[in-house]
Length: 432
Image (cartoon, rainbow, N blue to C red; front, side):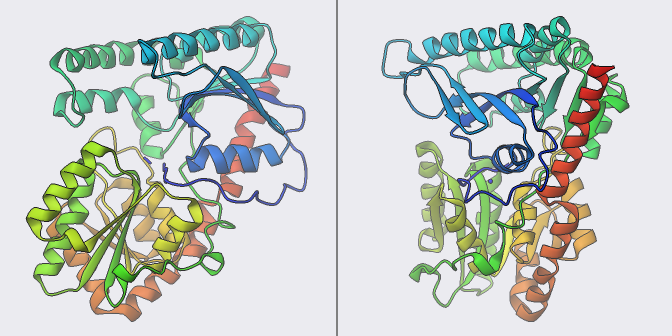
């Protein structure tokens, strides 16, 4: 997933579309994401590109801090937020109950025809409620599958990737298996259409019995006006002075994936490279404790920079400073179908990349010629990075190919055209 991912706030608005092609269309968008939103597909694709084309959006998101129940209006967007007070007794449970009640009220509004489109993102079981509301009102309902949520939860529980008690682990396994059955037998069949993140995700969902014509792949992308190295201030940090810098951009610095860049750094230092690793992303106290202990054990404490979650221009300043950017991505069933955002963010900034074997990354690097693909291991990544460190002219030439490739294939302006076509087709079917 993932700044999919991600790690930064939106910058200034992009230029408005020349025509309000979605003027008068009002959409209800229900998602499990944080409010205020920070993920690039929500901010760039919807709040900027599609809103600039006239789309009005009523959002149901989850507040990332305590606050009262409210509806925040921001131009063409309205954010419906349930009351959250985690310090009160059973704060988490009470918030969930309030959120569920809010979403039921929004479903009632949808059933009464208050919206032209209903869109559910990564909420497999809520899709049943909203799809039924759409059937009552004749409103098209679309499911946006940016990540195989249920498969991911099953993986986390079975492999112990997230600390949890055995009862919680068992409950998560039961939920994932039951939810998967309901999702493919009820949720998706009831929805009028589904947008998936990749061609491989489309194939996998189609294999579960969903008609292929109901599935449209829309990969993660970037807005090239924002990801423009010429307009980004270079990060100037004394910890990087005179050293070779690697950057890893991620929403959350998690051990199961961050261990590979750290192992790559250890291998490079052992080979005599004066290298530094910059980790850009949110770090929980538990993860920081794990990484601090491991870095001390490896003798790398002074060679790793944790930036935390930072605004987009600052994050890109670190990327611009990097000699090589890293994109390790696991190839488990939940991750195989992704289109890693960090990879195209690096390319848009004109940086050379070392990425691990993955369907989408193989295609992007193979087509663009912007770096190397290696196995998912620290030693293999270190070998790829060393090739770029040893030939900086070649590395810069490879990185320079990135912006044009992203502009042609992964710019949100063109991706917005594809989404708009899906919406118009659904609205045309409703009119008929």
